Length: 196
Image (cartoon, rainbow, N blue to C red; front, side):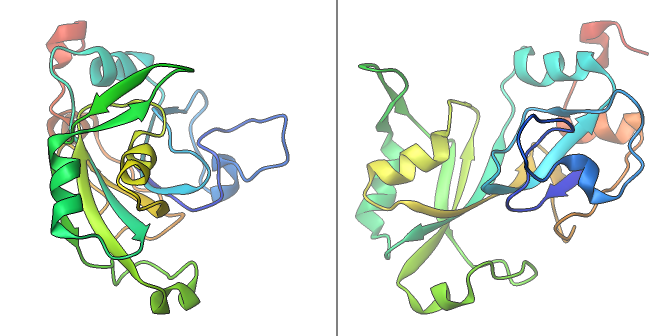
């Protein structure tokens, strides 16, 4: 597990001049790749593996997996707007195609004290922090959901996938986990893929 910092892509190679996972200074085993991804302007929990079967188990398994995000949005969110999110909001998923995105849970949250301020001056600007949990994974879904209620996303931090939590892992830090812990925390069924 990695705490992917802001302004870094979720890959090891790129034709563009961008910060890469290899820049973290950790000796990743050959064949390591990200399971899913976070765009360069998103932060938080990113899982890496050398086993391609895990990606299938996590994203194409029988049960959808819960992912939770701390989201800083512009302006103060009213309880009515929060309820709008709970009920589901239409987001664009194609040129003329919309999808009603429904979170599993959404609530007001506190600013994470252990994470650095990316923009300290922004503390003085009216904003809200939300905790949003999804099982869906449409392109930029969280950003589109909060924009749909009139509160553009300022900061997006993935804090957990199932029981795998970012916790106090600092930006840029890497933590290795054994396979048993990895599967248990992600609620993956190794037998589904015939894994030992």
